[in-house]
Image (tube, rainbow, N blue to C red; front, side, top):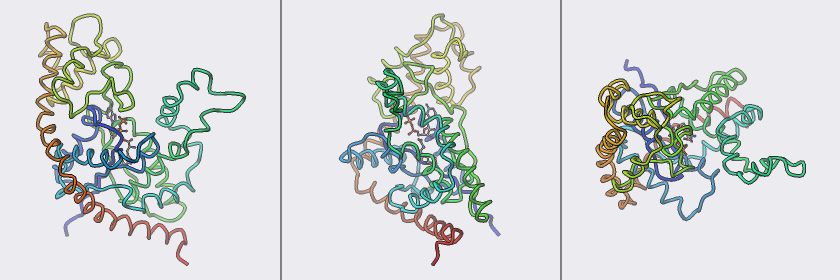
Length: 347
Ligand code: ADP
Ligand code: TRP
């Protein structure tokens, strides 16, 4: 008998343009994993998660379809993977609620991403001091931001996913997912699979303008977006923060800027860092950066063109999400029924 393929799942929030960190940490890997044929793949647009950020409802459909266009332009294929929209499947929210009831608040408080997002949102508060008149101002943030990792756990556990390709910043959330799966299984009987993360060689691409921080949509000046025209991204690379000295050498402590560009270049060319160092021995930063620009151009020019073509086909994009969501719902609905049975929600 043929063994079923292990399930693999990942999601991305529709919150803005994808950058090279998203691409090298996640999307490029999604495409390779899909094409390996070894997994039953699910990739989705985490629009419920995106409600935890400031947003304009008028822009949400555009952001969602744009992200799907990115997925398809990069090589995800609805014939090979199930591509779906989180909010179309109520089971995600239902399971998140159920998992909430076994999640210790202390675990959520420890989440680095939650703490970072809180601090990023309240610079004024940080400046003035977290406490004002004895009140912790962070307490005014939305509870969804706090509860974000529980919804993420639901996304994964609903599909019995064994593997979850993500960037390094999501590891803590995955650890929580594993903890919740174990806890639920121990309390109510074996229901969930404990998932494992899959990281790329570049799980943490750094910001171009501040190479000590990760490249993130929340700091667009340090981002290199995958759909940028040459004229837009070239100046960013040429003026990316590098370091004093002139050797193109990997040394993340002393040369974080150059090391970041080396990492990006190596990942785009699919070669090792020492090979890149060898290639640029005795060459200047300017020569190196010009080659980085060329590598970026080569990688993204095709994706950019495909994306342009796809974004105008909104009906087609909607149809892809609709069909994918139907397939995903079949699996998710079965699982949520199993969960409800386990909990005695059957009267
Ligand atoms: P952002 O942090 O820019 O808002 P998302 O949270 O939408 O990005 O991340 C989507 C995917 O990209 C996740 O799997 C995340 O781990 C990965 N990712 C985000 N930033 C980076 C980065 N700088 N380097 C590597 N992977 C990243
Ligand atoms: N939290 C992820 C991010 O910020 C997005 C996400 C939501 C996700 N649900 C998921 C990733 C489930 C992997 C699996 O990028």
